[in-house]
Structures are given as structure tokens and as C-alpha cells.
Length: 472
Image 1: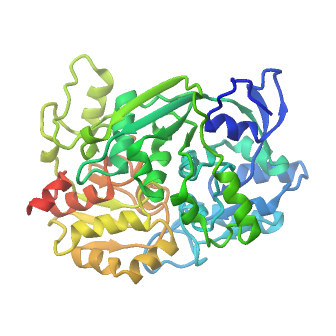
Image 2: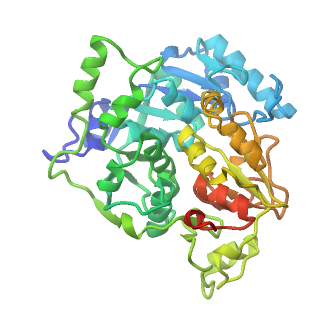
Image 3: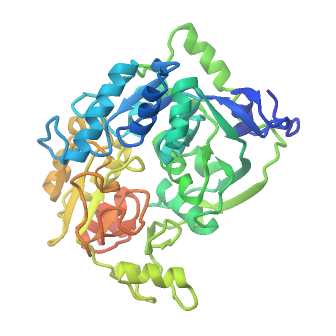
């Protein structure tokens, strides 16, 4: 169903139009949207299943959904089937029962493909261009790297999706973020998205779907694009898209659930049409110069409270939010970011725990040791990533440098398991949120790329990773 937004349509409008089941308001702004796939986890799905049971309803298309245990499980190297605490055990037990009763495939904590949901879905080939994928996790935007519209939904929406394979959906406005030019040495996709969030603010894309474009975006690997789309939600976007290209097709081909044979040829022919038309209208456009972006870190308690690593901590004069953030982070205005000492270093999460991230961090750590007084850990994004890293010898690089080599899971990204910061501990982190208490009550989080985390771990303080090419 055409959106009626003119002859030149954006990629976002094309994806929505292709999935409209019914126009609900006569303007095609609120629609009943068909959802191709979803992924469930153990902590946002229980209420939805309970309501299905109470209403004696079934799941409409069980095979369109995958269940993954990722949030509450331990990442200890010797973990077993049991969760670290009773609450987590209750959640995973109920998740297993629901998956079995409703016919949904589930990867439990000991499954060979277990991992963080947004890492596992692409590994399985379940994320494909042109799809609409909704899940009970805000970082479902990650799938935009494949040209799929992914977005997070609430518990009642999960119930609606499971029962009907549809959602009531209100269209978003279109924003294009163009990143022109080339990135400098030591600057990666995490720095692009952190620079954007700093530029437009934590609510700057609220009400929008962002399409990322430009030379710097096209040059990125698919994994690097996933980092950008993953964190687009941190500036309020409920959808993030990058037009699929040959890199995306190569990343999908041969995956266990990818199409093959004649279906693959048909899919490629369709996927190549998935891009915004010339002259398509965008309600807002933001342009970044890639050459001006430096390695970024956060100093505050929101992802938009970030700065280039070469900067100093901003003044809080007349800025209540800044003053509160600096008080929580125990930092002083005017101090150099590189003077901030850390006690913890963490590489993990759906943002930055894929094989490419681990390779970049290991490149910094080879021949170096974690600073005295720093506890460093790495939790691969999935069991498959962990096996790949071990096959490449990356695990030994991390272990020799002094990192803990963990199992896969969300781990310390959100402290719903036994990986947490102690009150007052300061952490260099490759995760996506630095909210108060996010990694543990009283813990202090500085977001950055995995290579920057590795550099900080070695130096014992926030550090410009580019200096490592100069011998520090």
C-alpha cells in the first residue's frame, strides 16, 4: 500500500508500504503492519506468554520467531545450565516452558549457537533486506545494517505480535544522516554514531527513522554498520536503515537460514531494489564530515554526553543536567579526559562484541599487559564468535594481556546477571548506555570503541588509541 508521500519514496517508506495489512486512519499514517520475524528473550517475554495462556490463544507463526537466553545468564568460563540467581532461573525456566508449549525454537544457555539476540539473528541468516523485525529490545534497530526495518516493542505488543503476526504501527518521519569523506586512522563506526548522538542529542531523532548514507557509511563493513544502527536508538530513532549492497549479500549468503538456489537469485533481485528513490523527501537531514571525527568517549550519564578523547570535561555552569552527571561520575569540569583513571574494562554487548570488534581490540593488546589495578573482561557476542576468536588465537591474546575470557551473553552491559560494577568503580566500556547504575549500582561507565577500551585497559586511564601507533 503506497504511503502517499509522493512519487519519490524513501527506503523506510518502501519497507512500511510493503508490509501494510490495513490502513487504520484513512491516511495510511497508522497501519496494521505485518511483521516478518521476531526474537524473544527471557526477560521481556514472560508477561506476553502469560496473557496468551490466559486468553487461550496460540502463536500464529511459531517458526517466524526465535527464542534466545542472553540477559540473565552467567558468562563465567565454566558456567553450567543454572542461572546465577533464583530470579534468573525462574525466568529461563518459564521461557523454556513457553517456547516448548507454543512451538518456538529456543537457544538456551548451553546451545552451541547461544549468544546475544542481535548477534545471533544475523549469524543464522534470519535478518534479510526488506524484512520488518520487531522484538522486545530497543536495540532491534541493529538489523537496519542489512536493510531491514527493526524496532523494539513493549510487552503488550509482543503478545499482539505472537497472536497475529502484526502490530498497530504509526509511521515515522524520515531523517537522512550523510557521512561524507573518509574516517581518519583509529576512528571507527562507534565514533561515527557517538559523534552523531552528541551532535543532535539523546532525543534528536525521536519520531524519526534514520537512513545512513554517504561515502564513509558505504566504506564500512556490515559489522561496523550494525554498530551504527544499534546505537541509533540512543538518539531516539525507532528505526535505522542502510541500503543493502554487495557486502550485505555476501554476509548473508550461506548462513543456515538464508535462502538458497533459485530463491537466493530471486531474493538478490528484490534486495537490489531496496534503496531510496532519487528526490525522495527527507524531513530532516544531518551531514557529518568523517575526516573531522576523532575517537569518542562519554564523560556523563547519557550517550549524548560525549566528546573527542582529546577534549576536556565541559563546564557545568548553568547546566543542571551536566552538573548532576559530573557529580555522579565524580568528575571536574576542565579536566582532560585522558586524566580519568579506570578500575574496570569491559568489551561486550550487542553493540561491540562481534569478531571484528575482538580483532580490533586484540590488535591493541598484542605484546601489552593490562595496567595494575584494572580488572578487564571480554564477553564475545555469541558462542559462534567465541569459537571463531579461539580459532584465530584471539583468546590467547586477551588472556596473555590479562583479560578474562568469558562466555557469551549480555554480561555487564546491563547488570542483570553476576557481572556488575561495584559502587564507585569506573569502567571503560564498549556497550551502548552509560546511564546511572546501568552496569551496577553506583558504577560509572565511559562508552567507547573496543579498541579504545583495550587502550584504556593497558594505560589504566582513558587513552587515545591512535597513540599506540606512536609507541604510546
